Structures are given as structure tokens and as C-alpha cells.
Image 1 (cartoon, rainbow, N blue to C red):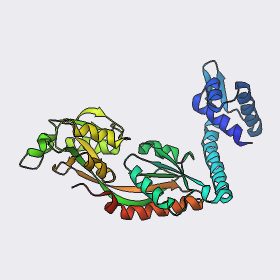
Image 2 (cartoon, rainbow, N blue to C red; image 1 turned 45 degrees about the horizontal axis):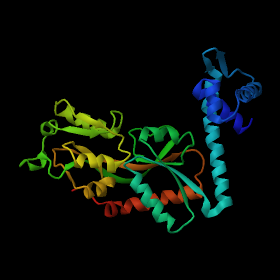
Image 3 (cartoon, helix red, strand yellow; image 1 turned 90 degrees about the vertical axis):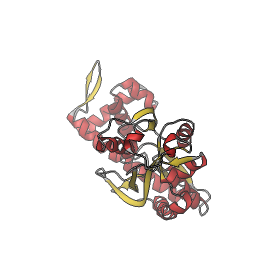
Length: 307
């Protein structure tokens, strides 16, 4: 069994079609067919049911897929460790971050770069649910993300820092002129820019309105918040209300945004570093995690706090 055959098998399992899998991995369809036959001969079972509609995993194939993903991740881990031993300071660390935690990762990288000038960073920025899939599959070695309510099986979390998500608006927004504290009903009169309904921050906002027995919020723009500058620019030039994490406050402040003093409208959360719980981490990965921990302790001073 070789790693190419595993990769070809996984490509077919993910696409269900030979021609799509062939395009994805860059080999011919006959080469994929031969790879599957080699695996089936070696394992002594059929991995796929073939039909004019495509290739569907058998129960043996589905079980093998689960292990093949882990095997590929272990193989890539081994290659990464050997590369680090061979290349020394030229080794690369693969990190995934959410839009809210990217500034923390950037600061940790810059801090470590002063000690290891040849350090390379492969940074993937996605929402936390995508990172939770990429980490066990071996696409990244570290996921820096808000701590999930339930840490997925096969992962472990290293707590880094606490932060707060607040509501923000432009400095001359009508709500800033109110004499009393802003209420949930007041917030319901204005449009919002928010992430999708499956994101934890959005669920908190939805729950906030439900707790006050109000419909809302009215989402005028749905954004992944991967570009905080773009989001905050819209907030600064409209009556829209947005959200801002502690890590992104310096950007919001530069654009003249203001935190809304709304009733119980601040949400604390734990930022963590998640890694696979099987097998040792490479020395470089361990070093980067140590830098994340150190940087998170300095974070409130460097990033500022919403006021």
C-alpha cells in the first residue's frame, strides 16, 4: 500500500466520480482504476459499488476511508517532522485561524520571526467549523479558534485567552445620542451586518433578541467577517450595527467606531489552540504554541480593549 493509492482512493470517495477525482489529483482515470484494484486486492474486499451514476463506498470502503484519512495525516506529520530536522529553521508551521483570532496568530508569528528569521507560516483563515474539519484531516497542525462547546473527538484544546465580543456602530449613530442605556428594542430598529446563522457569534445575537421576546435582528449584510476592515468600513458609513472582538478593536477604533452600551450586550468567550491528540507535536509546532500562549498574555496591552 502506498500513499498515492490512498490519495487516489480518498479523491474518488470524496467526489464519487472517476473523472472528477482524476482532475483533482492530476492523473488519468485508468490510473485511478488500477489504484483502487490494487487496494481491493490487498484488502480482499470491494471498496466501491460501481454504477453509471458513479462510485459509491461499500461498508468496507466507508470504514477504510475513515482510517485512510488518519493514515494520510500521520504520513504528512512524519514528512513535516523529517523536513524540519532536515531544514532546521526553514521548517514550516501550518496554522488555521478564525477571522477573530488571526491578529493573535500574526503577532505570535512576528514575535517568533525575530528569533527564527527563516520561519515560514502556512496560514489558513476560515470559520471555526471549517478548521475543526481541516485539523483531524491533517491540512493544518494548529487551529486557533474560540473554544467550541464540545471539543471534537481526536482533538485537545490549549486555553489561550479570554476576549469579549461587543456591539459597534459609527460614532454619530442615532443610538449614541440616547440618554439612557440602549435596549434590545432600540437595537431592533436598525439593520445589522452579521455572520451566518451557524456561527457562534450570530447565535448569541439571535438568542439575545429571543431572550427579550423580540424578532430580529434584521440582517442587511451577511458576512463571514474574514475582512474586518471591509465590515467596519460599512458600519462606519451606514446605520448598520456590527460586532467586534477584542482582537479586532484596534481596527474598529481607527475607523471611528464606538461600542454600544447596550443592556447585557457583551459576550465573553475563551480563545484556544486546538491540536490533534494523537502523536507528538513537532518541535516547531510546540514552539509556535508556546509563542501563542506568551502573546495571548500580552494581548490585552497590544490589541487594546473595547471601551
